[in-house]
Length: 159
Image 1 (tube, rainbow, N blue to C red):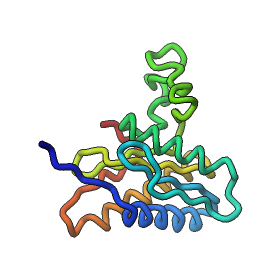
Image 2: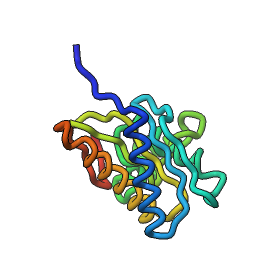
Image 3: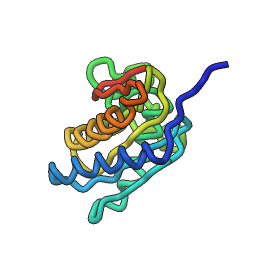
Image 4: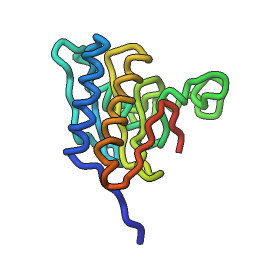
């Protein structure tokens, strides 16, 4: 039997807070969603003034990143992004009743080489969403370091 590391509300809230801090620093209004390994929200926040469409998009990105174990932008990164026209997964973005997000802003949460959830951000451009997402992953890494748990902090994640 395999032991599993589970993401909990405390860690999810810590990540959201870090993403919000970074978003405020760079002057963007974000929605942030942290999901568990099954793609279900643990924490979802929309900054005051952020778009009303943001929470659903952030959840879709987090769901996709957790479920497919890769950063969402990798699906459409030329030339070999699998969701690009002519490639093997073209059209995948219409899967899961439109919940599959194949663009920048979703990152799997990887702890000790296991995907334990995902984070999605919506509201900024790709660079801004990535900055806020990386801030959240770094905050989780710092929080878990005393427990000797290693968090992968990078934009391009594929497990």
